[in-house]
Each structure stands twice: as structure tokens, then as C-alpha cells.
Image (cartoon, helix red, strand yellow):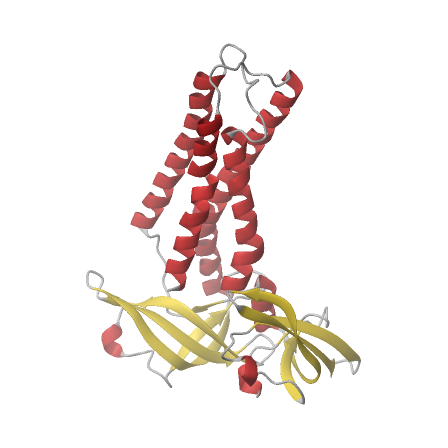
Length: 325
């Protein structure tokens, strides 16, 4: 459901990034007029468009090609130097079954100790190649390896996990990259042939599709990195703190809604105070998006378990918010 929603909004926003600016420009373009922009401004906007497209290409290559290679290398490193933990399966569900591979795509929630010996819970999707052994039923124990570098993903892997490249997925990503490059080249060639009229790139302005489509996609990337990725996939700092944080019992001083909502779900701010391992009293705040159904269940007074960064005690998370009621 979440992936379908992301795909829908991605296609919806891409419509306003690519065909909409082009269609609008073609609708109002007057073919009888000659390019009137100065050499300076047309050069500035042309250079801006080139920089934007280079950044977008590098973002795509890094996000969908290079990142997979780095993740596989990081997993190989974790096998060599990871921190072994025994985990208990608290939830287990089969997402789908692959007939060809005779494997189950599993979503399991595990409970184990983090790097500081604090009991935490986290979940993972992975392929179970031996579903007939029922190794991941609720209540069973499995071995996991924690990343010895808590600032890098993945934060943990199954000890018996094996990775390989999804050939079809890689080919699809490469094909999209080729189409993306072809689109950019075609955009420049088409409009240069259509609108230059012997005046070079004087037709380029900020609102021209050569610039505007790239700028719109740049805004889309910014929204993904700053908002969508944070609220849907979680803050990276919080995930890192889950695996490296120290535990403390904090007193709730204030709980209030910030006024920000995501899909009609309010963001709640928790202000707490606690004593760290050095005996110093600390004050910190934590924000979290809470569903309307769970809003009445969150604790608003008393004490609550938190994890905090020993280097920066003002950075905290409340890992099991609803369980603290």
C-alpha cells in the first residue's frame, strides 16, 4: 500500500515536472517572434540548466546504481566485523511467495540488544530460501549481526543472509538512465532546432522547458530528500541512535502538537528531562508523527524510557512510544 501511494504521487508530480511545462510553453509560444534574450542572460540560464541536469543525473546514478553496490560491499564487511546478537522473532508475516525461487519474502520484527546492551526492536524484509523449515516463526531465536559502524546502513543483517544483485532490477535502472539521458539530449536538440532561428541559445529563459523541467525535478528531489524520505522511511539519525544510544528513564515535562500534519497525522513534541550516565540533568525534546487513532494512547505525564546520544545528550528518541502508556 505504501509503495503504491509513493508511486502514485511520484507519477503525479512528474506530470507537473515534464509534460506540463513543455505543453504550457508550446501553447503560448509565438513562432513569429525572434529570440530576444541577451547573450548574458541566455548564457546564465543555459549554464544553470546544464548544472541542474548534471546534478539530477548524478543523483539518479548514486541513488539507484552506486548505492546498491555500496550496500552490498557494506554487508560483506559486516559479515567480517559485525557484532553478533541473538534475536527473538516477535512478529512474522509472509509478504509474497516466489514460485521460481521457492522462497518467501518475509517481514519479521526482531527483539535484540543494541551496541550498548539495551533491548530494542526492529524489523526487516528479506527472502527466506528455506520456508519449509519455519525458521522465523514467532518466538524463535535467530542470529543477527549489528553494523560496527552505527552511522552506516544497513544497521543489522541476518547472520545467514546472503546477497546478490537483482539482474532484472539493475537492467531496468540502466534502461531508465539511458531514457533519461536521451530525454535530456532530445530536449536540447528539439528546442534548439525549433526556436534558435539562427540566434543560437538566445531563446533560453528561466521559464523555458530546458530550464523549468529540470528545475521542477530538482524541487521534487529536494522534497524527497528533506520531507518524504524523512516521514515515510524515518529519520536516519533516529535509526542510528536506536542502535548506539544509551538508555535512561526520563520525566515527561510537556506534550503538545506542533501544528504540522502529514496525511492528516499530527506531529507531537515531547519535552523531557533525565539524568545521563555522568549524573548531569539534561533537557531534550523529541518530535514524532502520530496517527489519529494512537493520539489518545500516547503518554502525557510520568516517566518514559528513552535512548540518548552520549556524545550529544540533547539528541533522544522514544523507541516504544505507545508501549510506554
